[in-house]
Length: 200
Ligand code: ADP
Ligand code: NI
Image 1 (cartoon, rainbow, N blue to C red):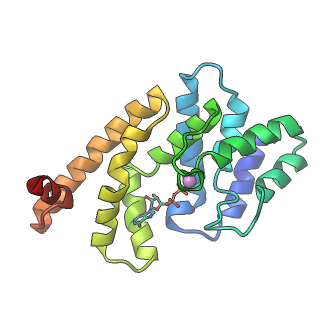
Image 2 (cartoon, protein in one colour; image 1 turned 90 degrees about the vertical axis):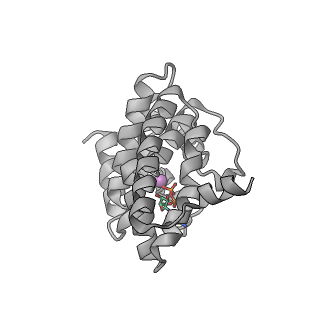
């Protein structure tokens, strides 16, 4: 088994109890997005990108009570990954979360790629599905998930780090806009963004 296959196995075990936004499939989609982006970004370390993408949520504080990337480090140690590469993988993973880094961009190319890959999974058709799954999981009404588009998801396309990430985000953004147009047409409600524009 390659280290990548072992990381998939490990992610599958870690996320087996989760439905919706943070299941194993999220890790796999982020991995796929990251490898697609990495193909057109010269000079990145593909193994760092792959392992950071697959295990980017392995120590997410919303899901696990680990500190200092304990899950990730234990896995890498068991697979014989050396200290230098381990630090690069942890650094990439730790730069992905926007809120934990007070909005600072990742300072390594691998971090930039994985952050873009994670953001792509929050927008487009899959992003729409995840937003409503999240709302349902937290017992919130549908409007709360729709509001999340205006608070966060529609802003992500302008926050991308890489050229391929920006292009893919543009396509997924257009799909979300089409969804919202149809949603408001069917409900007869007024979109919050349109309200704001009228007032200005
Ligand atoms: P990640 O850790 O993968 O970056 P988050 O934990 O921030 O993602 O969110 C997981 C998923 O839940 C994302 O698709 C996100 O858009 C969605 N989500 C987060 N907060 C809300 C919210 N308040 N309403 C609806 N969806 C949300
Ligand atoms: Ni994630």
